[in-house]
Image 1 (cartoon, rainbow, N blue to C red):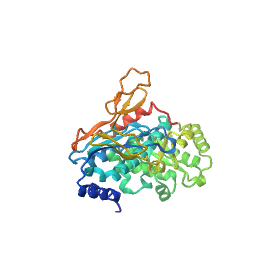
Image 2 (image 1 turned 180 degrees about the vertical axis):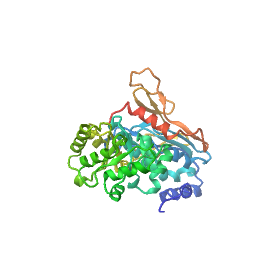
Image 3 (image 1 turned 90 degrees about the horizontal axis):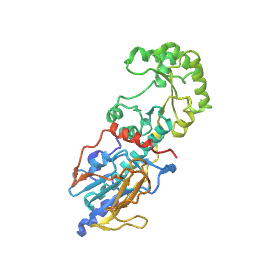
Image 4 (image 1 turned 120 degrees about the vertical axis):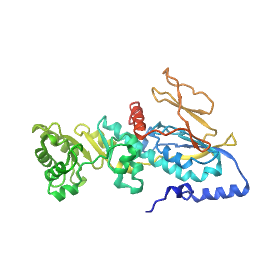
Length: 387
């Protein structure tokens, strides 16, 4: 496989070569300076106003065991804003500087996937979202994509390994292959019903051979009350006005007494499509929009050397703290040790968001389970809008 092993990443082989050269120069010149670096982003993609911080667990695994290294970070699943530090690392530069490439790669992609999932979940207004994005990226990173999508708000994930990481059962319906091989939507769902465990919901795929309405009705007639839902995944070249297709299918199912049948939509779905289809859709499968989510453009910069504030131009020097009102998510960044100038009227005290994750190379506490993180994300989503 054309992927790096953890051993290779830990050995610094997945790094930009100039970090290796910098380490060589500093060691041979005898320059040993303790630095503080912070991870921030100046802006978010697609004019997002917030994003979800994900990737800490892998970063911690990469940095643990490095003597003299301390790490402060947002808790995984925390919503963050531009110019807000999400992680601070302190230690002798040559002990961790070569990991900059890997650390940024972990955080940039995982946070992007989680943010897209959170936006889709927010747009769905309580309707279930399932991650179908694994097939759009290299299989070696599929578990990361699905874990991030689940944390961001997806209610289910499709791959077996991704579901294991999330601590849930994998979610799936019926592929076009089964419909083609059995001869039709009704035949496929009947075969599914005959073989697959009864605890798995019966959801028929109804867009393979003929009109979605007629395939939906044939599947409903075949299974009756056992049919939980139908999935529409019509190819774009045959889709037309998808909302009108959904309206028609819903009407015909209801008219014939199949009001219990849910409509599940997949194929080219993102938060904008979700908002447009909510009137008639009961659930969504989101694929490419998740796996190909825009990465968060994080940067890692030195802000202190031997406890003296310093930075390149365009960056604010010195170690910082992040304070947040738990009621409205109002957030203020201050120099370390400074109290925030409150700008909201809530009585609840601000919380410091950067928590110590590693002390002298040792993990300070066990990290939370993805399900716990996801619950935290959903609570925060209630306090923000998509705009």
